[in-house]
Image 1: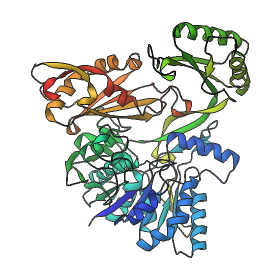
Image 2 (image 1 turned 180 degrees about the vertical axis):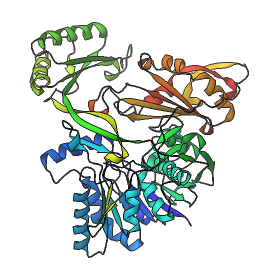
Image 3 (image 1 turned 60 degrees about the vertical axis):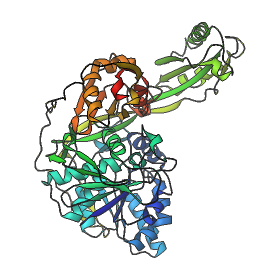
Image 4 (image 1 turned 45 degrees about the vertical axis):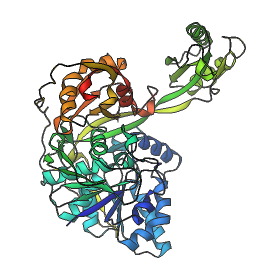
Amino acid sequence: MTLRIGNASGFYGDRFDAVREMLTGGELDVLTGDYLAELTMLILGRDRLKDPGAGYARTFLRQMEECLGLAHERGVRIVTNAGGLNPSGLAEEIRQLAGRLGLPVRVAHVEGDDLTARHPGNLAAHAYLGGFGIAACLKEGADVVVTGRVTDAALVTGPAAAHFGWGPKDYDRLAGAVVAGHVLECGAQATGGNYAHFQEGDVRRPGFPLAEIHEDGTAVITKHPGTGGFVDVGTVTAQLLYETAGARYPGPDVTARLDTIRLTQDGPDRVRIDGVRGEAPPPTLKVGLNRLGGFRNEVTFVLTGLDIEAKAALVEQQMAEAMAKSRPAQVTWDLVRTDRPDASTEETASALLRLVVRDPDQEVVGRALSGAAVELALASYPGFHVLAPPGKGTPYGVFEDVYVPHSAVDHVAVLHDGHRLPVPPAHETLVLTTVPEPPLPDPLPPGPTRRAPLGLVAGARSGDKGGNANIGVWVRTDEAWRWLAHTLTVDRLRELLPETAELRVTRHPLPNLRALNFVVEGILGEGVAAQHRFDPQAKALGEWLRSRHLDIPEALL
């Protein structure tokens, strides 16, 4: 008995047609959609300030206008976190839509994640709930289940627990579903999207992934026939490393042991996941806090031709004098040397000097900055121009996570008829400890090496968790793993990525995946919404690492 769960959204703004593609492309039992991220919660919080009835992903409602009848006709149940900050509001909108369409669709939703009232000063404070509220809705006959902030993997564990009758202590089965859910949650990232070895397949329009889940918790990751992209051990490995850390992957239902995962190619576009072991969840739930941090503005000066550093020094001094009265709380300058000597085009002869200012007062980063920059138009370095004129200061957000006991949250399944079913918290919990580092393979014997980019032998994927970033690096052969495990140490990573030199970096080996996962603390400041660095979600940090050169054994090249 197999449960086929597909995904049609990895973020708020993902491909609109994916819902229809997944419903018409092949057999499916459940269709999920993940619309929430740390930044999305802030955006929805600002929406709710303007309209108390807002706070959910409006895109999903438009998708249901097109496809709710199709899902009902095909018997596919819908599970989504598109409810955001207002799951009851979205659920009611879908009920009204079903009524207008004449569809006998039962819509349920999950509540209890909203802790904003307990955290004053925040736009949104939401606990990450598990999948058993979703399971309760489905077991009571819901055709559509809307949630707020649940873990991304809960969109898969909930339907699996309902379908197979798993209980809270079926840790290995639940952990298998968590792993499958983590692979599905980012949509096309599992089918060749954003993939280090993207040239190995046609990824112009990757299909969305689905998981064939079995009663024992094992799964096969695949996609509908005839869709673009590809599914192999590499694409699945890359997604498994995305936004994770060490051997333990904690969640509200179970702690999945990532060091037990086995991946096997099970045919074209099919990867089997088995061997996953689970442990009791930790005693606390993560709560994401989103608040406004102040206002920011930026201007990018274009410096062309000769004397780039002298031109940069001049405009920095002029801007400092012009802003002396307003004195923004934070002022950051970055000179990006995109220029080349004796360049054949003006663009390739130019460098970019980026100024970012932040302050609690919008006026300080708005009119004060724009006035200072514009007034230099005829009075600064030769060739003065900017990429775009600075506008008004815009608000930026700050993300922080805190932890509360399971009992602090009233997890409730609200059924289609309004009946409310309390979802009990985890009865068994486990305080997480560090897993001893696994034994590493013997290093490769000495031999000739060549200076070359790491990416010739390794893939990577990176992402954000609050102010931290992770970089997962993996290789595809045992010989390459013998080299990587002993070569890419924390010290070597700091040498290759100098931005990490003063930060705390932790390395987590995952031999089953032939992978190393690095967590770099604080590199993203106060999170993506604060835009601390030019790649605020660390999406390309892994690709930067792959481009760095080191001595690689010729046998691997």
